[in-house]
Image (cartoon, rainbow, N blue to C red; front, side):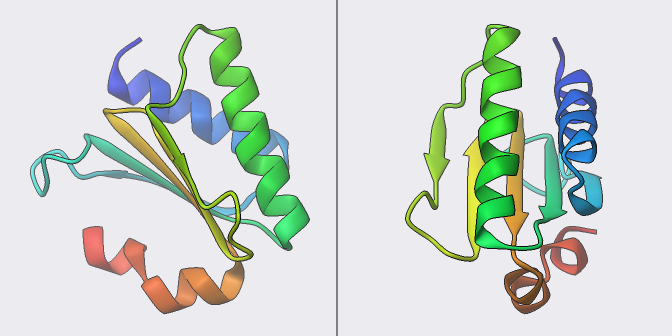
Length: 105
């Protein structure tokens, strides 16, 4: 599965769990960190954890495991690193504060 297919699949998973404001940003020419960032908002810490857990579970079903999973103890964000795709799931306040959408567009 190439990076765009991964990002699209992750967006589909997040959408199925009612994530808000899902963005898929091509950052390939802006950073060596990844080819795509997927950014989404959860409505509560429970929702954020549910979204991250669903992405991890559904991607593992495709034999794709994250290289890293940060923010498990956070109450406002979680990040899953799939190498070519990095998934950022924020609370509304954290997303507004960090403004990754603006930073990477």
